[in-house]
Image (cartoon, rainbow over all chains, first blue to last red):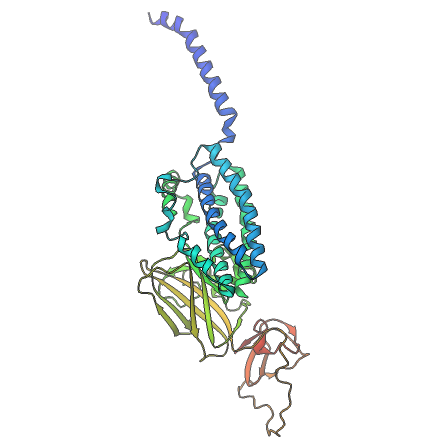
Length: 189
Length: 248
């Protein structure tokens, strides 16, 4: 009986197995390399987007209000690079089917109570300043944002797995370090 | 905002707990950007050969109570190296120290030291700082090159953040000075250069002289040691050229 079952089931099983194997190969062969991302990559993209969003708000205010043209230059450069970077980060999250924010239920204003992010009153406070005080605060806020971003970027460069993301983090690290240097030179006056 | 990242952080920690040993995104908090602290001079590229501090000048965090520029411990020891050519910012008797903050921890005090003496302390009584922080400190009791150690004492951890700032107090402008001292005094002074410092090897500073590192000179009654080999020019008088001369 067993033999008969094996006899009739044999070919069917083999066919099923072959089909399964084919499916697995098809599934793993193509997209496998494509999907080699890890949680660090996802965190880099999500945190990167949040930090860029914050930084862009500071840079927008800094770019329009700064007395020192070098501050405007750095702010403009940052905004241009961030535009490209955020589009890339967004694209990856879509491809990876991961949310743009890690926990959307926390809401858009979850940052208010947090230590590492700016608050509405910080942006308002910056806008209210003038002249040298404005410039000094703008540089300090930009630096604070960039240092936080550098930690995320370097985390990705060290522990990320998606090659394109690691590559972007390396380029971002170089660009941000240069901008940090220029801002620190401004701070030193 | 960080709250939103708790989920992935935990996931990653669960997947590979060792990932964040080398990079801990939430560990950094602040440093003095102006006058530039030692870590600021590293991060800006003004001083080279600093190591990893260039990427995280805000991370000099150690238990409270240290009198070292790196806060003690084995990290960032380059900051303690006085033989490195740290630029000294020329400042007046009243100095405003500006901080860059990457996290606003509840704060007990902000302290400033020169040598072993605490020259200023600001008590925040556990309040959270704003997005920026500045303190104006009276250094009128000091002159010449000094290293100011600043400590940001966090209220809800055992740690403090450390920043050392090299300053040249009352040095006047460092760039081409309006020829400070070549004027000959009209009254016949019996001893033209009193040289109050009893430094046997020291000569009086003079423009046009080539000075190797370590040369000791006197200028305006104060003693200096050459930090960087150069040929002296008018305007590079020791009090005005902290990069070249250290007060001794």
